[in-house]
Image (cartoon, rainbow, N blue to C red; front, side, top):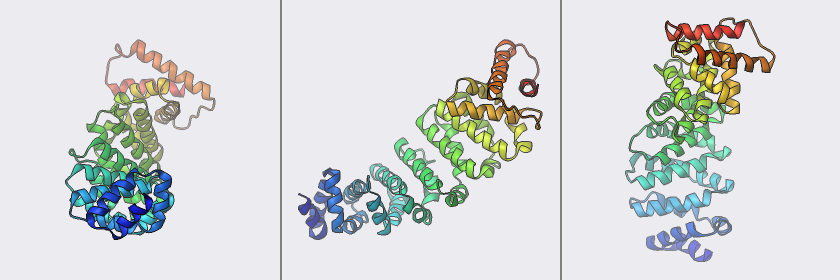
Length: 327
């Protein structure tokens, strides 16, 4: 069977190539690895450029199956020029199943470290940022696009390209508009946290950014809350003097305190660290980890007991509670 697939791809008619590409996708991983040594990537990429949607779809599926689980094939496919072809498909294709396959294919190719710089050198990052914000794109395609950007941004030298493409704004828009307990919100906030880790100033000029993140802390899933806290921690650590007041004015404290008590393990740690950054006395440091927990729990009890009775603005209430951290 492998020999028939190879011969059909290399020397068969277009109909025979389509049948071979379909059969290739159905082969076992071991069989696919064997046929990949027979120079079948070139004819599959040629099929990828076809104006016929069926040919494009089956070649995408076949190439995706070759790349899956094989770092060697991922590199070969990218070296053969697949990224530029995928860029053209995503710019022009209207059939959603092909768009989804192309996004999944890019995700697999971007998981290989040797491919990341090559992929980033194209206009693909900017295109992906635009695509993930489209209403007509399926949730799965958006998730794959975000995951591809996340793969690329693990290389620090690529982060400025991701930032300049408008990714922070697009991700904040996505977090703001989607269900904050959804996987989409989790993945978007995870990518944004990674970006802010490398480029903490990247969201400073985006209006409403802090408000969106505070809402994510209040309404998100455990993972989404964790990432939102991590983003605010990065922003506040980078420029406490400027960002502390903005974070407090958005009413972050109730949600932040809740995360510090019942969030994920990492979320709790970051929430307590952010609480200390938000306190009034910048020179005071609590060294005993247990004492941080006790102070946070004390403030949480006071919110339960007094939160509905204390008059004045939210900012005043927040400042009063934060002052407990320095006494």
